[in-house]
Image (cartoon, rainbow, N blue to C red; front, top):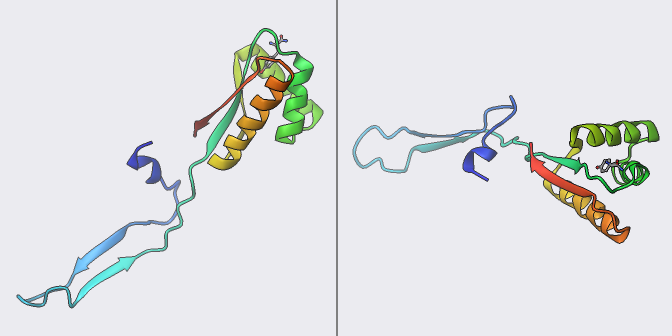
Amino acid sequence: MTASDFTSNRGGPDVTTDLKSMATKPGDGDADVVLETKPKTKRPPLYKVMLLNDDYTPMEFVVHVLERFFGLNHAQAFEIMLTVHKKGLAVVGVFSFEVAETKVTQVMDFARRHQHPLQCTMEKE
Ligand code: TYC
C-alpha cells in the first residue's frame, strides 16, 4: 500500500488542506495564519473478492458457496461458477476490506471443512 492509495477520490469533492499565510510584516508570525480545511469525504478503498478454478472442487459446491456467502440466486451463482471454470477466476463481489476479508475466511474455512481445494482471494480494486 502506498500513500497514493488514499489519494484517489473517484471524482468526489476536493479534500486538500490549504495553508494560507497572511502574514504581511515581520513579527506577525502565526497570529494570522489561516487554515482552510475542506470536508474530508474520501471513501475507503474497495476490494475485489475472487474465486479461483481448480480441477477437483465440485461445481455444485461452488454454486452453493456463491449462494451462501455472496447472496447470489441459483442462476447468478451457476453463471459465475461457469465463468471461473472456463476462465480460471472471476470477481464474485466488491467490498470494504473488513467484509472482503470475512468472505475470504468464510469461504476458505468452508472449503477446507469439506476437503475441497477451492481458493478464494481478495485484491485491492
Ligand atoms: N473446475 C471445477 C470442476 O470441473 C469446477 C470449479 C468451478 C472449481 C469454480 C472451482 O472456483 C471453481 N469440477
